[in-house]
Amino acid sequence: MRILSAEETAALLPYPALAKSVVEVLADHARGQTVAPERLVVPLPGGATLLLMPAADPSITVTKVVTVHPQQHPSVRAEVWMMRTQTGERLALLEGSVVTARRTAAVSLLAAQTLAAHPSGPLLIIGAGTQGQSHLEAFQEGLGTDKVYVYSRSLERAEALASYARQRRMLAQAVRHLEPALDEASLIVCATTSPTPVLFKAAPEAFIAAVGAYRPEMAEVAPEVVRQAHIFVDTLEGARAEAGDLLQAGVDWGQVQPLEAALHQPRPSSGIVLFKSVGHALWDLAAARLAAQALGC
Image (cartoon, rainbow, N blue to C red; front, side):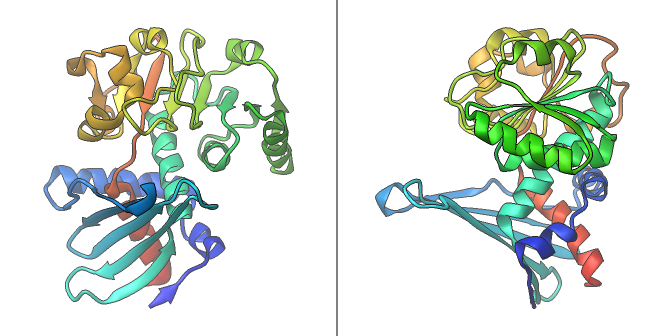
């Protein structure tokens, strides 16, 4: 069994190929060829949490093991076990935080490729943490994005991510205020841990990927923006349970479409598009498939 470092895990999961792997997993899931039960959440003493996220297809089985200890640093630790479905043979242990960051950004990339009216336009990233960086990388590699604005409550962190973008030969600027960037950005990524909205407007045909809020009481996108938008989600079942942006806006769930459906229809011809992602073990399976291929498993 291979035990892979963060760097080795990242090297196995290029964003464009990972987005294609997500498409393949969605197709297999529609045919009933994958299994991905709801994640198991186990409260631990002292306010900590253990999460188990399994998924399987006829060849590969994965289980992501996550622990969250809010008072520790790092507060989140994760591994992805990858095994052969038919025999149970352990194939590899992937670095879980890298898998999560890259597959989340790859799903957003796929949504932007499928739904964005202007996928080659300027990007605004709200939140300069791990997800902000992974989305910057994914949109550059998958869409050819070459101009980015970065906003964070910490200007120092925004400057650091903008500097990283410039190292990648992007035209990048950290901004103190959102308004000027919002007028120009055709792509917006919300990747914060803010419990209250940070995005209150967007350009008329902007594409928004909202990935930070992961509990019903959290929301990054203001209700007035949500209600204006064509709404898509990574999975309906996950969004109904966890997508605070949508729940707090009181959306009509009959008008909310899963990404799987968007892959088979024309992109919206006008208006704001909001893609809300809450995560799913299927995306870990997509990552494991790609890793297994690269490792020759």
